[in-house]
Amino acid sequence: MPPLPCMLRPVICSRVEHFSMAKPKKRQDGRSAGNPPPEATPPAEMPTDGPPRELPVWDEKTGRLRWRGLVKEFLQDGENQVSVVKEFCAQGWPEWIKITLPNDGAVDERNQLRNTVQNLNRAFKSWPLEFHANTKRMIILCVLEA
Image (tube, rainbow, N blue to C red; front, side, top):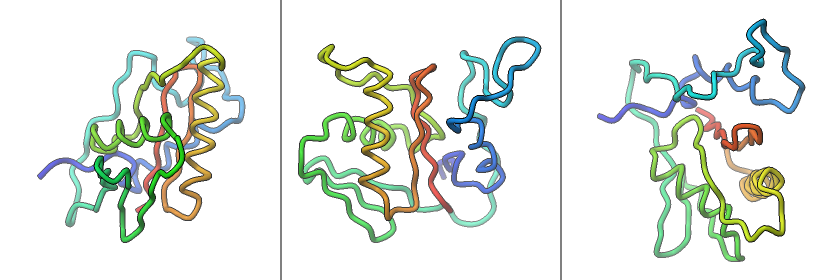
């Protein structure tokens, strides 16, 4: 049985606050408090009790994301949003992903990442999931509510 993504376990959900937009406190070594070092990988999987939780599933043919009876179809051009959803699905919905979005140079990469995450949150407003952008590390965090 594959391990569950980190954000599905309530024990780890409390770690989300370090990705908030508030200015984090600095530690003595210069890093922000609560943030992993840049070379860090997602936390190791912890053993879980009970059956595994259902994960969102991307259907490439129809351009739909399905999860817990909900369906989101990407009708308009949302290339960046689709890229993010496909990458999370491909990696099994980890806590965060590092992604390079297609960029024509018209928009700064950091603003593009921020705009993509805002559009994803708007698209999934009624869903029990939330995306957060860390524009310094160019990563996207996804919180799947249990």
